[in-house]
Image 1 (cartoon, rainbow, N blue to C red):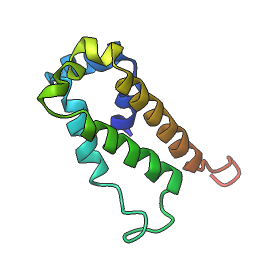
Image 2: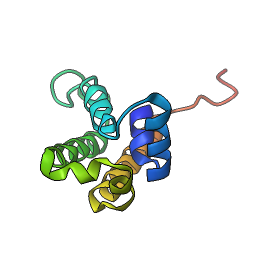
Image 3: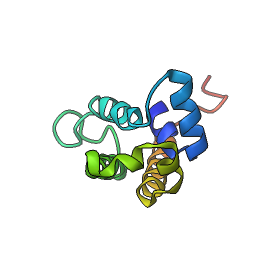
Length: 114
């Protein structure tokens, strides 16, 4: 969840988070890669545990971050790049959609059940 929250955050919040943790901006992608590796495969490990829509958002984020790699895209991985690059706007949109999907999966019991 924290990874999605940081990918959905504003550029200023992302930069502040990176500075607070002593990380470079590319750590946002590395953190997502690590966390995404813990997500059960939709078909094999846990069918129905997470929604197909959530898996699709995560796949799209993963694909986009993958395309943003390499020296040719180094400018995307700066404070200015986080604030101005259209790929980051798309990642934020996808992360917000994923968070919306996650919150729709959470069921809070009514007070009568507690």
